[in-house]
Each structure stands twice: as C-alpha cells, then as structure tokens.
Length: 428
Image (cartoon, rainbow, N blue to C red; front, side, top):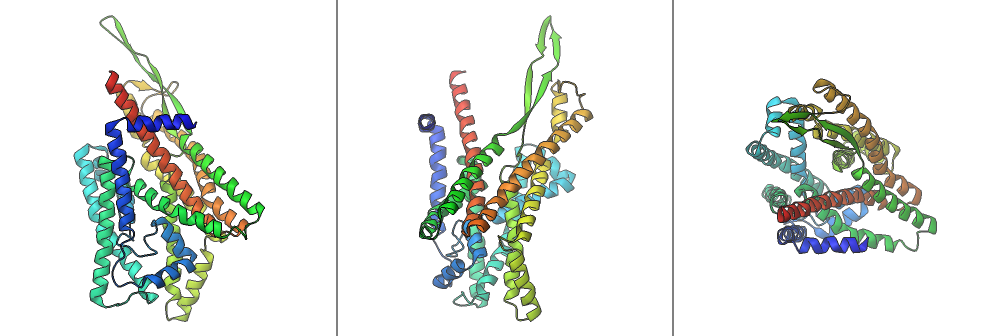
C-alpha cells in the first residue's frame, strides 16, 4: 500500500505538467493561510479570541472558516458567498428553462453563468459581512463603531471574499481539483493541529472507553466515506449493430456507472450552512433589550445546540433531503436517455426514449435513498459520540473529516485521470 502510494507520488512529480499544477495549488493554499492571519482594522483581537473560545457555536463557525473568524481576518467571510450564489443559480436552472439551456451549452454560456454568479456573490458577501459586524458590535468588540469605520470593515470583508472566489477560480483554471472544495479543504486542514492539541489537553480526563470510541468513530467515518464515494450501480449498455459496406460496426457492450452518492460532500456543506442559521439568530435575539425576544433567543439556542435532539433530527433530515435534491441536479435522466438514443445505445430489456428515462429515474431514486441514509447517519454520528463521551470537539471533527476525505478522493481521481491521459497521449 505504501509502495503504491510512493509510486503514485513519483509519477506525479515526474510529470512536469501535473507537477506544476500541484505546486500552483499548494501555493494558493499558502496564500490563503497568509491572508487568514491579516486582521481587519479596529477589532479587539484579545476579546474576540476569548469570545470564540467560550462559545461552541462560534467555534463551530470558526472551524469551517479555516480559523479566519477567530482573528477576523480580511478573508473571514471566505468562499461562502460564491457557494451560496452557485446554489441559487442551480435552483434558478430548475425554474427557468433559459438558464437550464445555458448550463448545458458550450464554454461561452458557462462563462456567462459564472459571470452572473460572481455578480451575485457581491451582495451576498455584503449581507454576510454586515451580519458579522453586527455580531461583533453586539459584543462591543469594535474599537470604533462609527459609520466610517463600519464601511471600512464591510468593504474589507467583501474584498476578501472576492479574493477567495478569485483564488478558487485560479485553482480550477491552473491547479488541481475543484476550486471551492480545495479552498474549504485548506481551511479545515489548517485547524487539524489545534484540534489534535485540544484533545491532548484533555488526555487526563478522557478514560479508555472514550478513547476507544474516538478511534472507532474516526476509522468508521473514514471507511464509510470512502465506501460511499466509490460505490456505484453499473447499468449495462448495448450498442446497436450496424453493417456498412459488408462490415459490421457497433455491438459493443459497456456500462453506465451511477454513483450512490452523486453530489459527494455538497449535501453536508449545504445542511451545515442552514443548521448554523437558527443558532446565529438565537444569539442575536439574546442580545435584544426586549425580554420576550431574549426568551425566544434562549430557547432557540438550547433547542439548536449541536447535541440537542431537535438539532440532530433536523440535521439528519436536511442532509437526506439535500442528497435527493443534489441527485436531481447532477443526474439528468432525460439528457442521458437522449444521448443514449442518439448514439444508438440502449439498456438491454428497456426501450429507448421515455422507458429508458423512467428506468434511470427509478434506479437513481433507489440508490440515492441508500446513499442519503448513509450520509445523514454519518453526519450525526459524531454529535452522538460527543454526547456519549462529553468531548466538545467531536461534532466539529466528524463533519470536517467528511469534507476532507471526500475532497481528497475526488482530487485523487482527477490526478489519476490526468496521469492516464498523459500516458495515452505519450504512447498513442
């Protein structure tokens, strides 16, 4: 296993094109970490650090921002506005046929859609920056809360979000992997050392049973995520035989792989983003002067704490729903059936056209159900282990592992495909 891994590393660095892409991606990673340690002006950093260390919800936000919120860096808003804009664009594609056609068309149409998403990211970034400032101002963490200072901080955070979006697109263009996923990966990996250190600080209080639960959970989550990403249903495909000039063409047999988890880790990211919203609203209500609003905020905070039953059930349901929703977006049975019909291919025992579409929809519905149950169960498993062991960092660590393992697997597949492509071009 180790020898195979070292051989693959050697193959990557012996390929100049792939090596340059890898080094470029690593350089972007380093740049994002430098930006993560440049704070915005007029913020009391010592009080800000104390606030994040004393609040589990804010610490949860900080993990997914790659540590940029704890010191309120210029990229504290991160890649989130672009992710939100891409989700909105996918939803609009399901409502407006013209956008759906643009998503299917060539490079020029996709470039235009990307431009729309960039433009949409700006107002979203402004709204998120204002929400961050409102939270800081409610805690008296701004040195000067004047209008001019607010404008400066908001502009800085929005500019940082645009820079992160640009860096993600640079990875798509000149690096390895999906830009958004790689930016998230860099941020989460940067927090692993501090998370491990926090576990060591609790070494005296953790008993042997809790330690075994942590190790079993880690191994189980990694194994299941790998299994989920690799599992697929192979549908047999037969090409029709054609005779031209006395020669027979076609007749080949192949298969159409349909992944159990079509969308990868995106349902987890969507669900986590939504589950953060109630706790954030509850915290803002607690800071209100109206006692009724304070009471409502306290109840919301308790009900949607990461270990409450309401939070776990809601999280499970959201991941399950987003898994189905993502399958509808990423797997278009109508388009696939049309392409099979045009190429003279068919599924044995299934007529081309509408019957093929219905069969593919049936298969996707069944395997997505299994994939959604797996993904939702793994998503809440760390929180359940947190209740069992009392270790606060487990809920965050489990979701982080899901994202890290999934992104690494997807990037590894892209590297393998590029290596195969290079070898094919070399010997063809």
